[in-house]
Amino acid sequence: MAEVEIAGVGQEQGSEDPVLLLREQGGARRYLAIWIGAPEATALAAAEVAATLPRPLTHRLLLDAVEAFGARLVRVRLTELVEGQFHAELDITTSDGGTRAVSARASDAVTLAVHQGCPIEVSEAVLDEAALPASAVATVGGAEDEPDEADPTPGPASPDVEDEVERLRRALAEATPDDFKADEE
Image 1: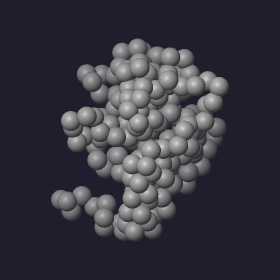
Image 2: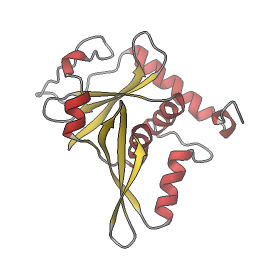
Image 3: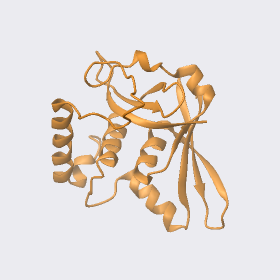
Image 4: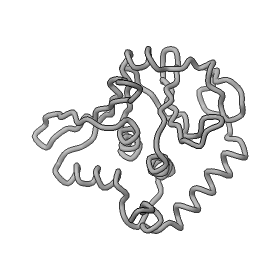
């Protein structure tokens, strides 16, 4: 298993579908692109900026319920790729000290990990099959990702990214639970 971090959530060029981009923290620093739905992208963005909402959304609610039973999410693992679908497992420690693995969609698992602040790991088999090399992924500024080992701190975000993050923060701060209801409700 290789530990990964969220490199960002964006859109594939020419598409409106959200894409979650994970980056391997060590080794070849490969990337994994996972197409996710708009609700998952919203929940992930809320978790990343630590937005405080008047009522918990589904991912926070699930973690609160797990903790109410004396259990805790300790790790998320992306375990396999089946017919183009990423499969994940949540590693949960129970009140009796045991560990349980719970099957989950990759987008939900990653969002839960961000809310909980726990590690995200990807199996080597999944990385071998689906990862993109660092040279194939353009960063926000359009340059290829070439980490500078001498300075591991990220550079400043572009003004467009900072504006988008600030817009998202304002929107989430003003959001009500009704804003998150599906159109069918």
